Length: 287
Length: 163
Image (cartoon, rainbow over all chains, first blue to last red; front, side, top):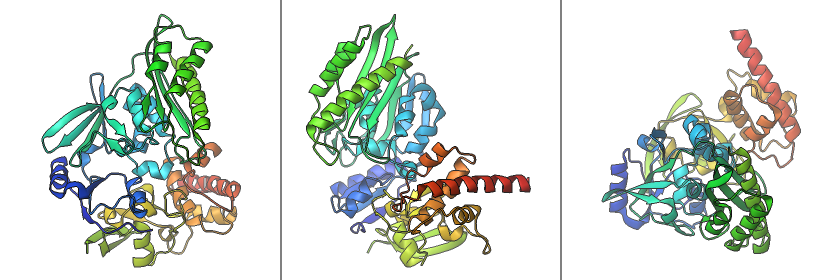
């Protein structure tokens, strides 16, 4: 399988890349890690006339800290996320979850920004971004703007990005001291997308939940934040019964697509299990 | 249309080639450079039979464009042996019978070669995770694991000997 013909462009700055995207219009696509786009091109699901390869724009990679804000360059690879000391210390959910994405070779190429910008509900970083209250930095012809994760994912393969925008960075807050976290992902085998997955970040104060995020992967047209499930636990001293109740609330908003991984009923049931396990694990790590 | 000049170091040799931008690295290697070691298995970045080394990282050559390798250092299984002497990883696969039909072997060798530089003294679990992007449909994993363990020992002995 060979992709259809295209013109290849390799800008060395974000400005140059945005200029190319503006002048080439909707026939241009950004090439990040390429592990979603190239397979889609082989299958003719995507047939861009121009590829703008942003792999050589060095300012798009790496992790930096300003105060409590941790900024991850969009072209930071999954393996770089896994190995990064700052992320492991301050937002350990991200490296732990990245280990569950694809396989070692793919993680050398796949990037956090590509995973988010693709808008695929099966990708893991959208739910993780929601769980971390991430803010996306997007650069377009009019300059840079910030978009919270909660406003970024609009539908399947549909995000707040315009054709001439580049997602340049993802900024997350360091977890509060003593926060617990978990990402539970049911998958059939290494490299597979989630049948159902759940991210949880929780902080306790005096034994009661002072901060909670519960988000879901591949259980609807976009990643989902389970607000009602969070509300069940918020302010409470958590019991097994409350965890079950929260899982029921999360299952109620699941709208997964039936595929070879299972039908709607099975995936929703597995979502409930992943939510319960993720809450329990996150709580066991919180102090 | 859409051809580009690509310069890269390929198995230690400088090469300069005119490449169609849509040519995947694995096709460039096999069809243009006559290096048929990297195999085309699934073509969907699942199986790892096309694994090569690009700038010190394992990459699936079926999901990477040849033009993206401009200026890169690429190593394929053909570049493992030096002066007709098998690389310790190859030697270990041979001795431990780490292959059955052999189709996945070039990818397994290239991944093991890189993995043992990332983690020179791995546990069995770490080996299984380290080569989890490579499938052997003969399911000959036990001997592959043994081969990687044996290669790790060989490489460490070599290191000690040269120290």
